[in-house]
Image (cartoon, rainbow, N blue to C red; front, side, top):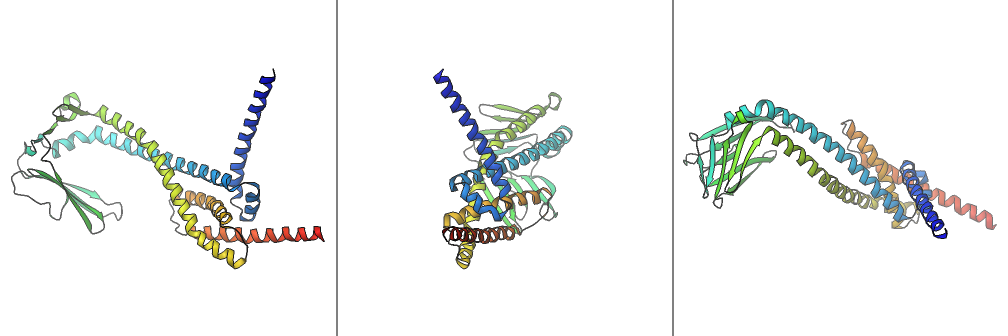
Length: 324
């Protein structure tokens, strides 16, 4: 009976602590919008607890971003699946050789060469229309891709040229001399095959069903990585943000003679970053550009430090009245 009562008390204590943790987290979120009460928050909660709540807040932000990316990827996957179902077989018929083979480091193609196909696309940055080329030539007539963007496959190498940013191109050569056997063939459409990939040990047929399954599994695999790496980069980015603007806090602290320690200034910087981050999320939801969130952040820092000085002054006056 006594052991049971001890276990009950421990369980109730754990539940109480969990409840206080939840209240504390949401209370800090709410009070972070009011710089005037930052001193009260810092008096009530240790720096470690404020920092822990801040990390939890960043995790929720990373989770929100991951859900957004997940929805975007699934929407993109739906468009891709529809395109594969309606147009992929025609695309392969027009643009892929009947057979393209690499054997003992040399390319062999079933089509008359040079085999040249061009694809028009629109740049997201400026809406400008461009062309990308797919070229196969094992005869030696075309040895360089030149000023074109795209891929050139010659007898013993693959060259890819792409635009990294406006006016700057990157060209990479890939040596295929060590590839013993690889082949791409057009599939049997009557059996639902788009393409067949052959290596020394494997034959892989590309079908509608497999593309749907692979694309779904790929999204499910990369989503946890997006969450983890997004969370890590978010922590690094936000802490760098706080550290960078802590210089402003130090200057303001010196001017106002608030006599705050750096640990306290850092805690103020963390609290001020919560509403600024939430405002940034709301702005991004409406696809509106607002590059001056740092101004809002400086306003929060200024009001917080000034309010801290005022509160400290009022407390000192009360103490003087008590001792008088």
